[in-house]
Length: 286
Image 1 (cartoon, one colour):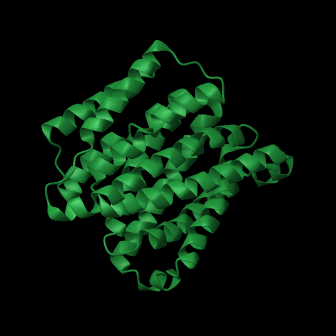
Image 2 (cartoon, one colour; image 1 turned 60 degrees about the vertical axis):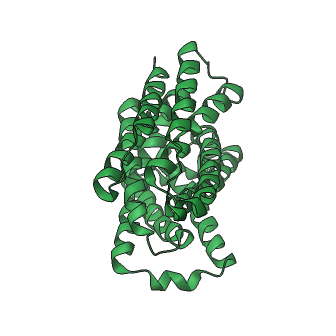
């Protein structure tokens, strides 16, 4: 069952990137993140109500609560960086860097969780690393040169925080129902997202979001909610070093839709990089 949930997580995560990109063309990325988190929170607690797991909240240990909170903080930071990178750069360049967090996740899973690093996983890490490098290309336009460093930095920070999210989430979700754990950590993400908005004085912009972009932001929230619920259900019963690589295959969905929706084409070099990332990811499953 965990394999099915991991695949579902990858699909919804891929859709999230495209929907979010459509929703932040004019809307500030911090404001968009805060709004979509409201949708994710509603979605998460709705699933708790449907599964009837709320009464288990009294059995959650202090340690589990701490790791869920830390995971939520890491997720919030990753989101803020990721959607800022998406606003500045192309989907088919930002997503590969974000997905490269798998390398750090595997290392942390080995150090912190004691999961085994096999020769196939090492091959996979090398493939993903080289593939990501090949896919990072600057546009030739002057506009891209101006914002290039900006999106790259945010994408790298997104990857780092995403890795911490996976490990902290794995530890925190082990002592609680996955749906309830997801709902609790989403509260932390919501508080963090709106705190950033108020600290930067952007709260007034929430009322100025266009209807079309608001719709895409809401849809991306639903997609995120679906991805989270599948992802943490898979993490609860499956090994993090395998669940995470499958989830990162969402890059195929994101790049396919980026071509259809935004007409973002891959160069031959980028295509080779994509192939290496996919092969490297699949190698980790052996």
